[in-house]
Image (cartoon, rainbow, N blue to C red; front, side):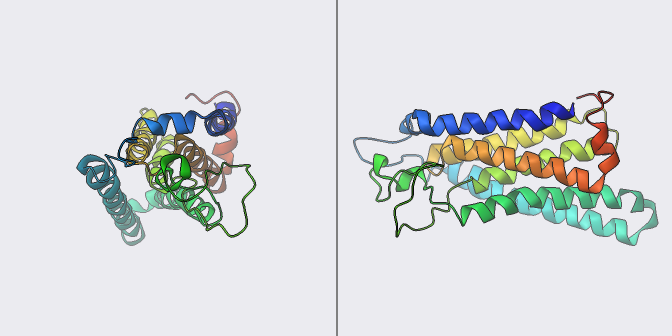
Length: 230
């Protein structure tokens, strides 16, 4: 089980780079761009802006607050203390992915589709390994921040695994669904390329995976011994 957890994300990274350098990113985003008006028709659409973008942000804040209250409960009431470490794991793991993504966004010169020249913006289209001309501002678009708020729920998979839940795949599904929905919504708006979201997916996965090691090293190593089931 542990092998696919380590290797599969690397293939996803390769796929993201292929999306950039093959033109798939540009091709995909062109479906949501109106060439005749030089605009993004869905940029302010209620579903993609109010529901998936703003609503998704509020949902994450609500979920984090609710989980924090639950963790505080484990500190105050003896019957719940056995859940203290698992809940703390989720808080740390869920925060780690978006924090890493946020830090990278402040250091990269990769821009949103609506800002770049191929879509009549003012900034050049720069890919991951391209040389960056002097004087360009930080892009703050890579990796995808909003999608990371959904993919961070990958941590539920490891939490449920630790608690012995038989339906732990639901934790994995939650991360894929929320991250995919948030990411697609931003792509339709013209705010991100698919490659941005794929990188965020992998970052959040590895964050959840390796924070699990920090909290439960023995159980983490057990993921590789072949006795564990997906």
